[in-house]
Image (tube, rainbow, N blue to C red):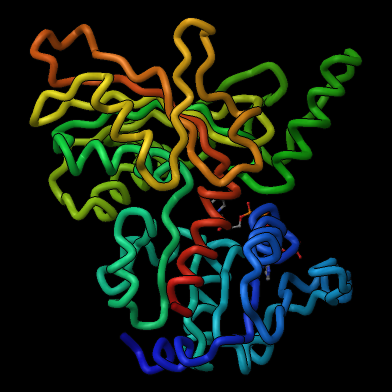
Length: 346
Ligand SMILES: NC(=O)c1ccc[n+]([C@@H]2O[C@H](COP(=O)([O-])OP(=O)(O)OC[C@H]3O[C@@H](n4cnc5c(N)ncnc54)[C@H](OP(=O)(O)O)[C@@H]3O)[C@@H](O)[C@H]2O)c1
């Protein structure tokens, strides 16, 4: 652990900065710090020059947003970064040199071998190995891995197939706005030219808007989810595949999960395991046909998990199917980052 980490542990009231405070994740970071009564001496809100001077409310007071610059990180103990990969690459090392520990929401450092990639419910012990930067995993990886971990511990996942239903908020505040505007235009019979996402979003579904590798056919989101799940689980050879898709939902991702296990596990056993697992809530009411939905997952801390059933295509009883819904702005980003910051202080 770095000396900065020791200093922070001794500091019960740290100076906290949010880089990207005006964005979808930034706003949620503020909400999590406030709701969880995170102890702090000062909250510094940083964003682009476009937002400098704008005020945002925190614990009943107005805080003026400042431009993210080298100097803006002086004196910061904990820096929560959610301003995109380019800003993280440029400014996270500056924050570390200034004595801060960085919790980064971007993908910039997630696969670096000296950067822990942490979901506190799974690998909180990895936090101690940081050298100034701790990475928050991709939102799909967090929403899938949190409920899969207790099953993996009990019956060891040999193969994992993920199919996502990803909300607009995963692409930031501007994408949420575009979903609203394009839906209004569609209903009013007006033409709408997408600006943020590459395809019409209202009443449509399309493959994730990241670059596709012509060799493998996988897009960048799918590769991130697959690699990050292996790193978080500490299972470099886990067989995992993903298909990532955007759906016209404002907030909270859903994921269909299919797992092949080393040891057979019944749906009842899986349900019982998940019922007592941290960070998840079982929603699995077969009689009512009531299962995890984005509307129920929105704004809550837990990942909802249901449709826990035997995969009938595997007669050996080694395979299960599940369906999860998780608020990716919250557990998939801000909450997970704040949980990591809390561990830094404890
Ligand atoms: N959305 C999610 O569900 C999610 C989940 C996990 C991780 N992440 C990651 O978190 C990061 C933020 O995502 P988001 O969804 O919150 O995006 P967003 O809504 O587009 O917000 C982007 C934030 O970054 C700031 N920013 C942009 N350019 C900047 C610059 N040159 N200098 C300083 N600040 C700058 C913006 O400030 P202005 O308002 O001034 O432009 C804004 O505060 C991304 O790396 C994303 O991959 C997002």
